[in-house]
Image (cartoon, rainbow, N blue to C red; front, top):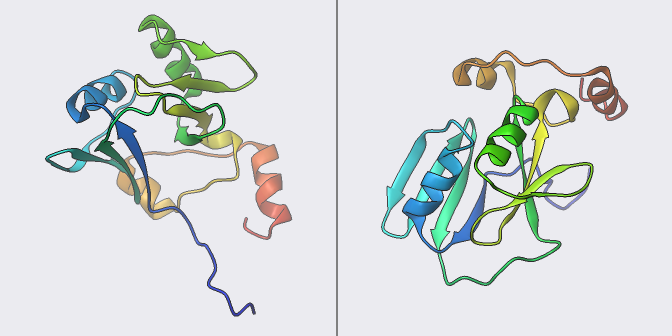
Length: 145
């Protein structure tokens, strides 16, 4: 056993936005979510046992490499909603887009990746989601299935 602490997950990701209410409205167009809380200059979106923090900050513009990934139940439904809203999807094999503050968002589908939620958390979120054989294979290789 290593003497160093192990990383066991991500509690939250904080995004810098120019206006918290505008950010909530923007993300609310594409994702069904509930607020964990809100204060002056910050809002916290619940994602089951994790959360996304939206923090008011001076705008720094887009960064080509900095990004975060959101896991969804239906990636193609997100793609259609983005296109209908006129949000530019970044060309490539992934579903990436920039929010109005330059945050790059990568959208992946739950059943296609090794990321998992416990059955208890999925039940609490009202979701019944499975995994593709490829995703299960990734989990098996790590002894996690």
